[in-house]
Image (cartoon, rainbow, N blue to C red):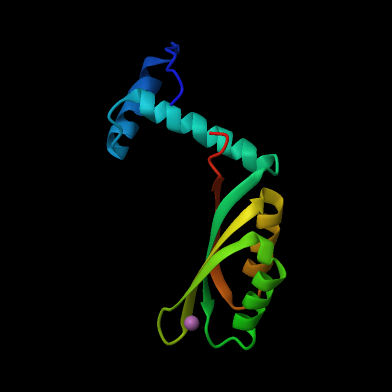
Length: 137
Ligand code: NI
């Protein structure tokens, strides 16, 4: 772990009180850890926006009965196999499939692949979550 440096921040009292209430609700023990996490979140956003390598999950809920959809999703993952680390398929109920695809690669490639799969007809909803590989955090 890197050496810790102390720093001071000036801010409005009511803003600080709101912040303290929020971080208490989220379970932070102190401001420092909450602020460290906020800074890391900004750094991760910058990595994503700069097309740096990321790791990601794409969660999708889709119509089991839509013809060819399952094979189209599989085809997309084979086509971009360098970016796919793993996938899990759950037969949720009679009508719905839930699939989670774990991906890595430049943020732009991962986003492109997610956009492609989410835009397929029969995919009811999905979310892509990208985060840092951790190497530069
Ligand atoms: Ni299924």
